[in-house]
Image 1 (tube, rainbow, N blue to C red):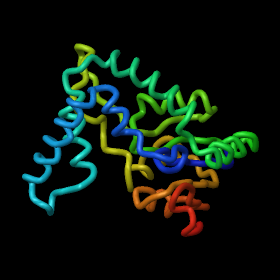
Image 2 (cartoon, rainbow, N blue to C red):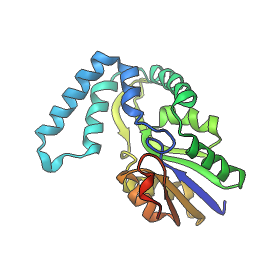
Image 3 (cartoon, one colour):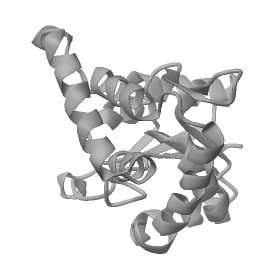
Length: 203
């Protein structure tokens, strides 16, 4: 591929965050509320210097998915993906992805959102790959509550994209909406803001 377009998901292809709604769906609202509160306390105890979005996300996942059947999560993820495709995609961003695909460009989702529900969305929209946050599954088929590797945010987006490119050097477009995309924008040959922050322009 001579050109690759990398799209963030939450806030870019979708107008909302999707991790929290998914975890609420999977765990149930009461359990999710307790899990978020417990995770916040765990992170707070480490001290402000140690606080990060990545640490909070890791703590939330431990609280809400550890010990659960991975097959149940996949079932929930497929239903959740259908809901996103029906009503939670940003038309402008999807049209842009389709434009790239029609030009013969590679298109890939690079996101901190969960790969479990991004994969069926990517298949529906014709993306070539999903580089997103994966959940670890134990030998018993149950979720460990840990991520496989790092949360796909910031510099991790660049690492995942470069690993997927595997030494190839296409012209890279990067679409995003927030500070979590800055490193990917810096890596790209053409960086574009989409979503609610798009009024700030492009780089």
